[in-house]
Length: 157
Image 1 (cartoon, rainbow, N blue to C red):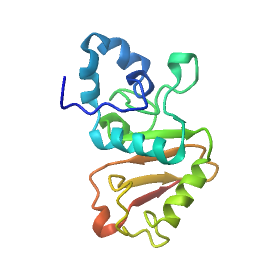
Image 2: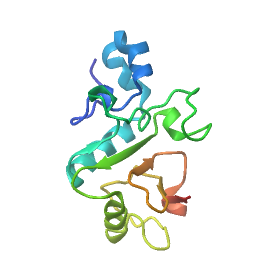
Image 3: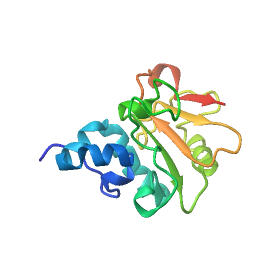
Image 4: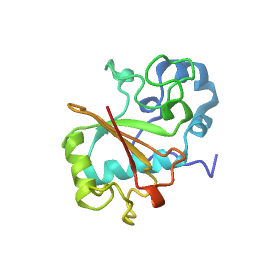
């Protein structure tokens, strides 16, 4: 189906839970419609800039099942988590740490110390990130938040 954005670097199974995949695999590429295209484009950009990364790895026997799209009844995370709307992902990088990615984005002006938008065009869809001590993944989302006026929101735990 033309017009649907599908990532260049990820299979759909890497971005959805096994339950979602089993329930919807007969729909084929229509499963991509569950995502906000800005998340998928940002994942491709993160892969291009920072190298290989994992969202979910359940397909290969790994532990990550809910780092991408979550069902509304998923008990993982907040009740209205952006993951449940296809607007968030948790990336685990192979060659860099999540802290290095956040620090690099600050250095390049996306996440200035005062948390104000600075006009970076590479990751301009990101409106919120999470940052907690010892957080080994990079959570980003594209929630309804005016990052131009208020800066990329940084949720601290």
